[in-house]
Length: 376
Image (tube, rainbow, N blue to C red; front, side):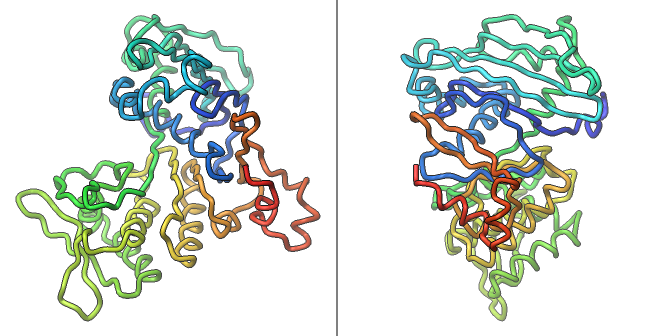
């Protein structure tokens, strides 16, 4: 599997025990497009945070840095390390060739961080599910041993390790909430920062400049979509200075250009979101996880965003966490997972179309059914 395009796959099923509010999520099946909904604090975003942690630790090989930035090891465990000294997970990843499984466990260690105490992987053909032999990696370890196994360090199963590593590294999380004056998108960025849009949208300016130069039709599509929601918008002004570029745009019938510090929070998030959802295939990750894409958007923009998400989901696996009834109603019932707290632990409940068929025939919307649930 030397060609990366042949490694493309999806997350089929996941079990997570002990990560934040995910005390016991067993065998959760994930569709191509998953819409996570639930009350405040119900833990719907923690599923996204788990994959963010895993992807970060495999890309940067620095789990310790992630844990430190997220408040320490104790904060990553269900009710803390005294209650839950260890978290564990098993992930099933589907490719055309078969099912790749990865399991891992992290334990709380002094002073206040996490370390790997278990890592294993296996591959099974579709017609021989669960028949593969598990390959265990040397433990304990501060960082994942999967990259070494993928590189071929004599542990065996290198192709499977390479596939799993590629797929988990290509789970990208996006959260465009920070639009403050100190936010990344307010900075000048190197023109070469164009491989992928960063999780916070910080390198939006070089991404847009790259699209304007290399994918002009795609760039014009993005600007037209923005104009549908923000009529005053004319075009971006992306002029490099010293190899760096700052996000600026101009209005219709006006010579003045506006930097991010003069742009509303909602407009900045709109720029990031519409750019992400209209990127060419080679600039998209295999799995996109977007936290509250509706934040600060006009209702019309929410409807348009939902249509873009569905379009991307025809090519990539997409997860979104949302609290917007307008966003929820744009999707099918079978795409919706409701997060609920049971004894302070998050449960994910799929909305079964057959269960709600009578309601839907009476023209109830999915959000009507969700909002009938008690808050919390």
